[in-house]
Image (cartoon, rainbow, N blue to C red):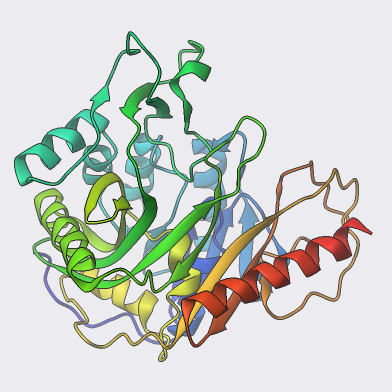
Length: 376
């Protein structure tokens, strides 16, 4: 376990690198830090949250090492950041994380742990040894593709998942996973390498698009599972966290079918549910930093009521994004004159309420309202 040290002081700068850095930047701000973000979107929210930020990649091509390292170097020049926190965008390019770790202290799982967590054969064997249910996998195409999915090694977000019958050899590293029944549930945990503290369970849903039948749609907290089922998921997540030596915020994705469940994947970094785990005191980001130093904030994080967040996707090609009077429940707001293709992410829609059903209903109403306004 890493030594427990004092948190960096309020006002300290921190580098953030992620496919979308806005949620991490907002969490950093709530914890009193100054976020410096390199990501794919350079949206209005991120600009407003950061003293400086860089567009350092794109959703289709991902991060390129030279461009990202240069962007982070420019951000760090005058700010003296205490380290770097990363989000999604590195699971399939762990070598880039290794290059970053040579320059800045990483607050998150070290590259070798990410490599283990995202290796399908390693994860399947670990689940077998721990008694965690996990769908069968194959590293080669199954003889009969019915009932199988194809996934990218190191993929994230659901966009990389497709029925195995749709697979065409392309040289991209893939694996095949047997279809499992149930609805998706994610356990968010805070880990320090030797222990794990569960923060809560959320339900997720898909927003299918042409060629992306499992594209991520959104999430709602709490998951409203029977307590004994949720406890089983928490125990499974905790055993995997300890076996892998995970640190910081991590999520564990399951499919739940009645009393049964199966682990689908481990996301060894802060992820899409950050927006629905905004704690009362704004300590979540600080808790991530502290957990990476060895200290777990048991009981310090309190989450009120219920929360939901959904991705609103562009309903058409938008040659030039108009200047909008964005509502305060919209995040990841596109800058004016940005060009979007049909089905590109438009923004994130958020809602809080007393219970998950009403939070979900509210986020759906808000998404419909926003898309109608854009489609006019």
